[in-house]
Image 1 (cartoon, rainbow, N blue to C red):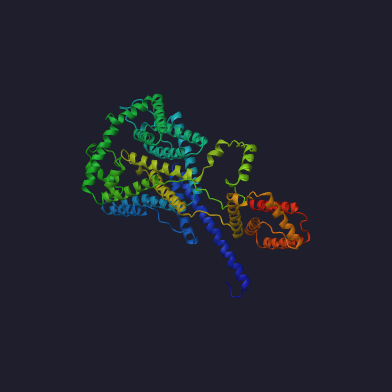
Image 2: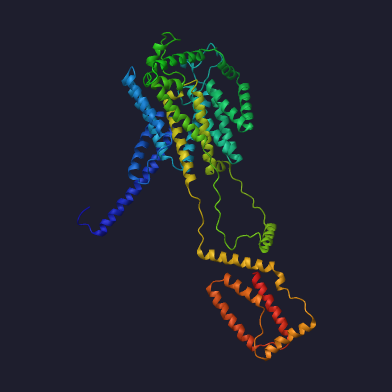
Length: 603
């Protein structure tokens, strides 16, 4: 800033710099989230592009922390087990047969895990962002499923991929894998997506939403059947069956109907699934052999394991099945055993803590509809105790007709979700998705695939962010409407007036004139005439006058009280001028005045 600038110019430059900083803060906020969405969309389609989007999102998130004072780093519920997993997996590199390879593999894989957990967990902070993340995920799923149908309809050569034991299943010639590397990996991905869609289906608040989600479930189940992945198909069947037995029997019936339909249409699928319980193919036998070898590795290296990513280097020393065959075994086909073997039992337990802690966290989330805000009472509110309000309501109900709701288009209805339905369905779907990963982990190590692992860590961050949203809603104080002081004074005055009227109505006997003899009536009629001759004013009934003054003093403000005094003085002067002429007129005037005062007290 130059010393020659005037104070006005310096102020202008300061405002320009502040406006520029605010503009860049908004840009970093928008761009960082857009690249998070890009990662979620590209992850199942182009993993390398998804990794590039992740790196850009990480840089933008750091810049946002530096430029936005309101954007604070927040600690997620399971940062501690995540940090332990990172530390223990790094320590396992020290015992690896090839430390250079293990380090290279570690920082490439664990690096993207941490960055994915970081950018999603820190940027996902609103319900609108939850909707956007679900939308881009659904768009990617549609492309994956359509490409899977394309492969199944037009065929794909899998003879060179060794995914099927041709001797055990001679009729099985097609197994779709879509944009993923392997049918089993695609099946694990579809299990996750089906669980997410099912959670939203359960919490949907309209029939149209259920129709759209039901179609998506059917398409996902059909594509899953085309993979012929036995473990994944049985896992999703078990999840739905258990949910149906404990939550909704209709889900169980639908699961049975879909399963029977698929097995009838495709007998090969039935043969494939039934082979799980027998040793009719090499796949089942090899898995048992791998697990036996992996247990031996864990027994020999229980604390730090054999080294990150070193399974394929150490397995030949524990080969009890292949006996020196020229085949590279890269994982144990069980992610629990695989982690315990590579990074040790403590490292595996830290990941289990992170995994099942996130699972229980999301299943414990309860999203309830917002509590209605009670408006402050006003003098115009409906009062059930007031006879006039009751009659007016009866008349209004008799003439009012229910307006016809316009027909909402299917897609518009599907896009409109209330927050608590959306978050509740998302939390349930995420929990079921982790259950599917946990069950699939017993028969296959889907986490060996980099996009699958990145997706899992994205789910961890997604669950933590949804839990934070739920906690922030619970901590938000209930909104209360502010009532002006003048309105409160009017309300209290009306309440007091109603109480006065009720007391007057409950004591009718005090206002009833007792029966008297004709002689007494003549004496009472003579008294006002005598007062008129002596020049005095006839006395008004004391009770009515008192009620009138108390009611008007409580129901009006200071100006009205002044006007009342002026009117009273005018009435006194008029009474002095116009004195009653006979006894009968004086008695009727007294009755009329009392009646008028009683009516005023009612109102």
